[in-house]
Length: 173
Image (cartoon, rainbow, N blue to C red; front, side):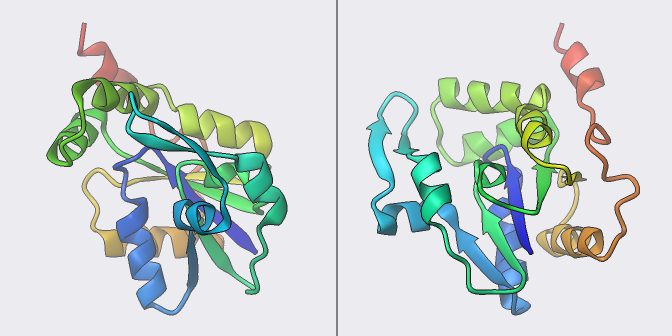
């Protein structure tokens, strides 16, 4: 089973997957796989990010494990069985991304994407099994536990749309 651990940058994918890895699970960092495999086809200097040939990466990806977690904001675009979309309050996400030293335009783009569920919507269009985990106040260990719980069938409260930032977004106006 391949599980996409996906979400807007800053929602906790890396820290939660680090916990899963320490617990003995196979975790693939798709950005690293793309770099090593030659799937980075350019650099968007304005956004400060690599451009990955997601289609070519998907076609070439081979995972020799019964259960593996694919980590990236585009992991839901791979040939996965399920996606777990990590979500974070836009206000908290803004602080996390600003702490990384990201430029204001990039912070705004990602906060807006989180506010309107861009990645959840993309995942639902592609996959039959999509779940959400709110990482706003949880620790990486709690997030990893939630991901594993979903794999064990504890999906109630994690359905697409279960995380809703509309009240927060409306407060901006």
